[in-house]
Length: 398
Image (tube, rainbow, N blue to C red; front, top):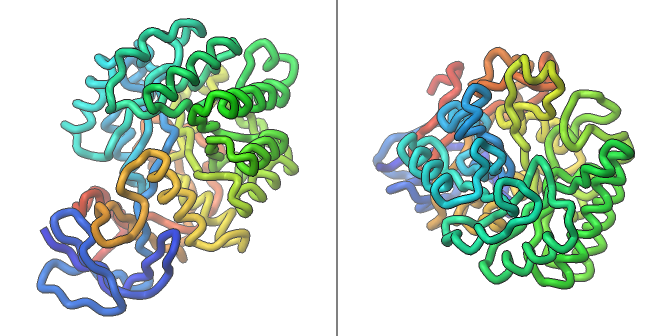
């Protein structure tokens, strides 16, 4: 299969120019100012072509909570948001503590053929906070382990987990929360575990990725650790970039304006490696009962583009690095950049289009969002995976 995208603005972490891009057999074969191939063509004039987005932190709820989301609805939502690679958290039912569940998820995702899926396995068996023996059974298909949604409070358990993760070449994704402290002060709860896990990564040499960083203190600690050469990366969410002093229920909570500004400064100076959605769909009933989380994978680009690029804080190449290239490097996949020989996972975007968020139009089962009714710029027009069109905006005509 061949495809030529013409007269489009081509942007990734290292380039920004108007030109053409040629895809053959699912791979980027050529790009230049002007190309001429006898194949299907797409007119990209006025649009922007970027590497599709890679999300290191997603909840698709399968198995066990498919009334909230499943691999099919989550995959459709991801494609609508411009994503072709997602890393699923393990807080399903049963909790993902075995290769049996990994195989179930990967096989079903392959059968659906929507997005590329990686399944994270729990650090402790069934989130019991203690048991690590199941990690010995994991094979090379598993890259990340995390007790996301709960967090590991025991110092010795996390120390041993980092030793084991290093032996197996795994990255620990930390949900920085100490349940005992959360009810007292959620800021202390996040900061104390952030400091602990960075230190344990430093002394063990284990790879650490800090999820949904939300405080000024945590950003400062990560910045300091990186200067010291600690093997640490981190992510922030679109909602922590866009919102402050807001009581919409998420975990960690929306912080203050100073925290939001610190996150943006961390993005500008390179402390923050990637933007991850923490897509956490819930039913209306569960949300009304206080379930934390939002359905964010369909709104991620427009929220971040408007708040970071449209506002002049960073350029589009930097945003591509945050949403694609760095995440691709952390996941060790040959995606996230526009280079010859790279897999043709791409997203076509209308940056000038102003949209109003309407949760009723979400393809996700979860309609829970604090952005409902708000206006942002940047709309995904088309998403390609392996050079194949997987999503087309219904208003787009070519």
